[in-house]
Image (tube, rainbow, N blue to C red; front, side):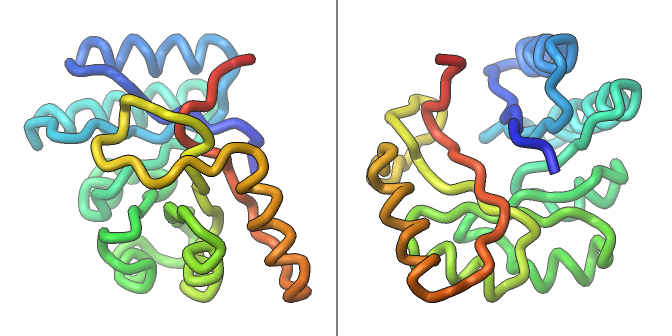
Length: 170
């Protein structure tokens, strides 16, 4: 599994597509298509474009929140927020071979996601980000260390965890 996941950004379909193309051109091999409050027809179009771009670049294409759209465009998987459909429902719709990721903000969220059978966890936010409307408490690096330590103390096999929220190249 890749170490870096690009979560798409932009207020228009053109901005979104340009940013996804830039990420792929710079070697990113995992794209999560996320466009909150987009008109559904434009979001579907962006997902179709993104799936093709990812296929052309041997990259993984994950759709944020929308299980049915992920199925429609034959994406590689879906990423679910804590208040979205369940991982179980996503597995029923997408099948066993698709990637299903989930958001977590606390150690108990991570444990919940592990119990649900997520393939990976997006844990955050690392820092402040303006791309999320209702931002959970910021973890910073110390928060990640505490959560990982909690999991290690329980002798659990730690799943793939991505830091999300305010992650920049530095």
